[in-house]
Length: 407
Image (cartoon, rainbow, N blue to C red; front, side, top):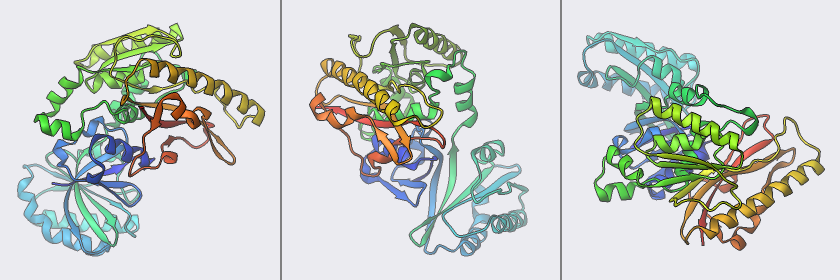
């Protein structure tokens, strides 16, 4: 069975993440915010993906892009599917992506389908749309992914309509808890969202790929057990967000930071996490300068590097130039240090600063000299390098995700 995923606010991040987990030829971007994957939904580790918000199973593809005709098809076929839904009141909703339709028309269609379901002898409650697609809170709070839930997803695809059913939704409450309930947080060093940390880890390439899992005949539990044999290093660990997500993915987590206070913060946060979550991996945090430290053995690197001075408004060009020079120097020394301690073929993902200006993004100068430092920058089939920048409106300092491979 084919999967269809709805991507997050910056789709390129989700596409690169998926491409890091399975072969590029199994992925097909659909419109601006969806992607099909030629893998059964049950075999996708959806809750490890930070760049996707919804996982669905593809039911069929209709030979048109007409919402009204799609609803007619659903009304005609839905009664025969009700036998597979357990007893109890059905929760029903519709999300639409890319089709030309007004929200009011979707709500009218939903009520029409409600009548069809009731006529088939089942009680049903429908979730009204405030916009063409239901948000994650609506899907989760109305239990649309439960055994008695049904969210149908309609996605425009080159003059056709993919009809799918939601299997899983991003756990927004779990993300919020891991982000906001940690005992130690520090806005001054930047607040790395857990979802972005997941993406960075997946882009580092140290997860077990779809091919490896298939060849070994592993299920998700066994995959996590194997991952616990691998140690993921974050050389700029800060408050430990990447370390936390690495542990939840089944890795051993190893973090260092120049600031001893950050080491203490990471330690406290990981103690808090492991007291509340069952994790199979171990963790270690210690003080260390990423430009000079000789690390204990590790298998991969994933993390957010030194972003430099924070700016709340556009800085003077001269000030920005000075900051960029300082940050580039630190990154050059860091990459030289990593090169000394890794072998050819070693892959890592780092989030480095990119500065938003009136003329576009200014990039880290070190990225222009990667070959000299012993690295090649990995390219993706379905995502351009210039699109792998995590940025929110109003931010001056963005995060550019860079995947490097040792030459």
